[in-house]
Image 1 (cartoon, rainbow, N blue to C red):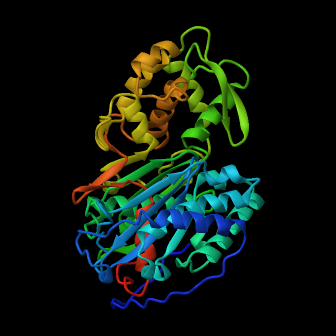
Image 2 (spheres, rainbow, N blue to C red; image 1 turned 90 degrees about the vertical axis):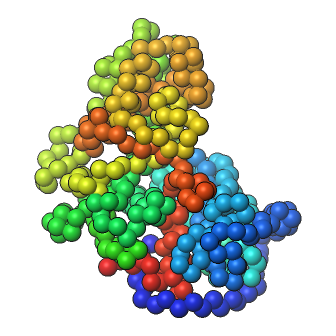
Length: 468
């Protein structure tokens, strides 16, 4: 999926309703869902411009490893968010994730149609045929075989084409989202919501995001650093994307580490010890852990473990021995972007946030909190020496199915941030799930960044963003 170049800014909405042919079982189920959703259509009120005639919409589907989420956004001519009902975003989630339908592509399509029925109740009918739709499948679908993921995406494309009038310009609009795209879309989201777009690169916000299967780092770097940056990572992804946003040019360093997300890292850590006890699993727990259709032994040691024992195991995940061809590397020969002021103010999203809340050093009543990276280590030291039974009292916010991995997750995230990414353990960062925006809270995810690109590619909005 490429960033589109744009030059015009002319307000011109041409509404064309096209009746599309519908076929098959997916269509019959979608019609029923559409009829059910029609009675709950949301009213459009308030916001910076509440007139539907001066608005456009974007429908973004996030095909994550644990579920598929729909985000509907509404923008005015200045690309400012406009209220949808009582907020700036309509959100809904269904489970399981698309990767669970490896043997049932039609089931994946049906799950998406459930969400699009919701979207049709939000977007006025006369605007649906000019509303861009994008689906980005993330690490879960990336982990499947090429054939399995292709069959799922093809089934979804056919169902969307046959059953909705939302705008899908090409197959790239319903595709696997690269980790790099995930990273820079999140960077756009966070900086848009914090009104940082248009400021100097040094005043922007850096982001790190941990999902189930991968983790991303993205931040703005100087023009000089970008000019001397290596072109491609070992996996073939470009390190730097040059973009034009809010009247300013930015060079965004971004890299995605596949198989280093929360669920993937647990599987990798358990795999290190095979059928033996694992020092990162709490004493008193004996069970199994499943990831990617593979089952792993998850058994704590007979005697209490410790932070040091778990950390020594976790360090084996990272290849620090590969020669670094650049001045600064994280691990496995990956350039780290050089750091700098664009990374100084860092936001940690998704699993970084939820673990901080579950471990008790971030406020569970707030969608963002400032913490020190060393707080992950302090909590890990407490967790690792605890038994499973004791942890139920020490970490009451943790769900029962993940409690056994509290030590593991804390040690892993601290080691990743400090040893692999090279961050200062005493650095203060912001862990975040949502960002306050004009009295409302929006999800800190890549979806809004993708929506901004999608609507800016329309003739109405092409003035805002392009690859320079």
